[in-house]
Amino acid sequence: MKITDIVHKGLEETKSFHSFDMQKLPVKPKWYLQLLAWVLAFPETFKVHSKIRKHNMDGLKSPYILLCNHNSFLDFKVATRAVFPHKSSYIVAIDGFIGREKIMRNVGCILKRKFVSDSNIIRQIKHSLVENKTICQIYPEARYSFVGTNSMLPDSLGKLVKMMKHPVVTIISNGHHLRQPVWNLKPRKVRTTTDLTQIITKDEINTLSVDEINSRIKEAFKYDDYKYQLDNKIQIKEKFRAENIHKVLYTCPHCLQEHKMLSKGIALWCSSCKEKYEMDEFGRLLNTNGNSIFTHIPDWFEWQRENVKTQIMNNDYNIQLEVNIDLLQNSDGFYRVGKGTLTHDKDGYHLIGNNIDIVKPVIANFGVHIEFDYFGRGDGLSFSTKEDTFYMYPLNQEFSVTKFHLATEELFKLSQNKKT
Image (cartoon, rainbow, N blue to C red):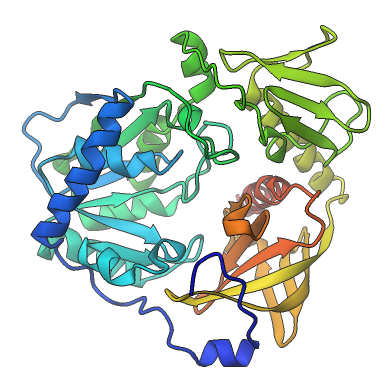
């Protein structure tokens, strides 16, 4: 079936189908598929005039762990070019296998459910490094950036590096979000730059603590595409440059109403108080009445985060929505297993539907996967258990699922603070 098809099946029937093999070890990429990957990667990276700068890479040989920031599909192509002529294995979310599992396996991809602890992944990464002797590409943010800035990283990264005993290289790209933001996938004309940097040598792994390793990784993963745009005077002239930005900037800073923002062309406005902003060619938001509360997009986004955090601290955060529920059982595609009720509050997620009763406590999710207009299904979110991955689409599509992203991170951080 096509990935866009909405196929209705009962939960029990769907779960009787074959499931993803999460334990399968990665294979060394087939030479002809690796050649194809290079053929596909190089033209697009040249098209965007991608400039790759290498730091502290002299003498470094494959294999190593490659940690990549994540803003668009272009990330994969630039990373492929950056490590040329070396081969890689890739950790890929299970939805990336839909309709192409065989070829994904044969290019060395490792299957992963997002934001779920999985001991199999340790064995698979080690196999790719030690047995296959390939670079292992990991996208630790596990989702596209919403506003071209870094996302929260798991503390387990430091333990992984310590365990693998291989050098760590980061690849941080600037301009990928500007070119194709997750909330509007129509490409813009933007030149990009990428920095490939060895941040931890093999000799340092034994001397650095887990906390020190995590600190280096987090320091490397600081970026801001809109600051990069302004600093480098990058003009984006496309007339659709603000279209759908209301999906991530969902709260009006003037009247404070949530889920009332709309956008079209270069404009973003509140349907409640009618305040209007326009995005200029340098990525700044300017209020048409001259009262610009925010001009820098990430500032508006982080202000919303603080609002959500305040709601949580005041015990005012409680979301309950009716949702359509899809189950991703295998690479054949999604099956719609009915409607249900999704609740998110200080205790975490609770999904109730026909024969479905799933509780995801706060401590189980440092992040949540968000999609915008996902293959015609609408805006939604997904979370996984160790056996299943559910996608949920609110019937009320005016609700911005971005709020789930912010709340999930803030709830997790507060739970960690309580431990210390």
